[in-house]
Image (cartoon, rainbow, N blue to C red; front, side, top):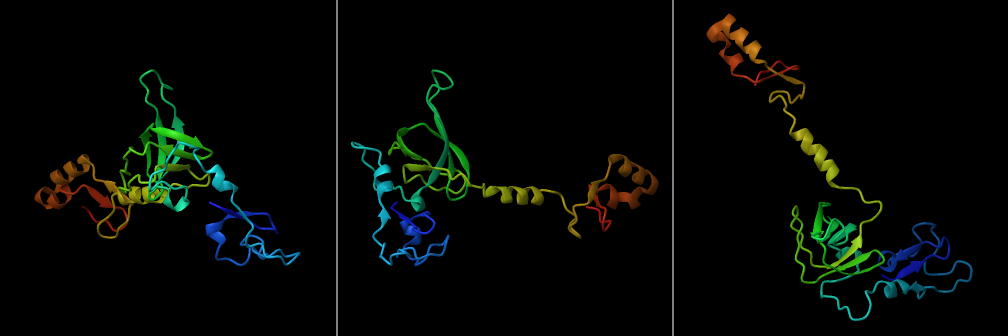
Amino acid sequence: MAKVICDGCETSFLYEVVKGLENCPVCGKPLWVDSDTGIDNSEKVDDSQNEILSFGEGIELGENDSFDADKIDFWWYSIREPKTLGENDDGEISTTCTSCGRLREMPYHLIAKVNDFLLLDPRMYERCSNCEKKLRNHILSKRPADWVDPRKHDICRTDYENVPKCPICGSTKIHKISMTNKAVSAIAFGLLAAGHVGKTYKCDVCGAKF
């Protein structure tokens, strides 16, 4: 996760993000050439982040374990240490699936933590209960601060889909036909009211009964 720093606005970017750009996407100045001296700064890449993103000596990473943001399977957003709630509390890590946004809790199997990254026990096997994404990368990065739950739109849409609608005009302006209304119709009209008594709702827009 090497970084590139713009000389113009001093904004830092991940090298993988800007390696194909000539100018800074923030201020527009040349990203690889110093605008004052004309000196090529293509080698000016901050590799200090690579040193920070290490869990220390003696900890070996698995073949799928990576700090690369594109390879993170789950973000974490809170940790409950073991025995926080009592002697029998095993602790847990609250996570978010990076693919579908499903929130879930994982058992506490934390091997190491550095900055915003966690390393879980490589023997741990988990998958998202919604999209079935597997936990292959046992490195979890902290959930972005500007993260927005992508399911909110789906929740609103699902709620709308579950609202009864008129099968004729599609309106949601309907009301339930009361048992009293059915009884009065049956007494007043007898067999002629059969079509009314057998219905549950009436549309306030088109008058259809269903």
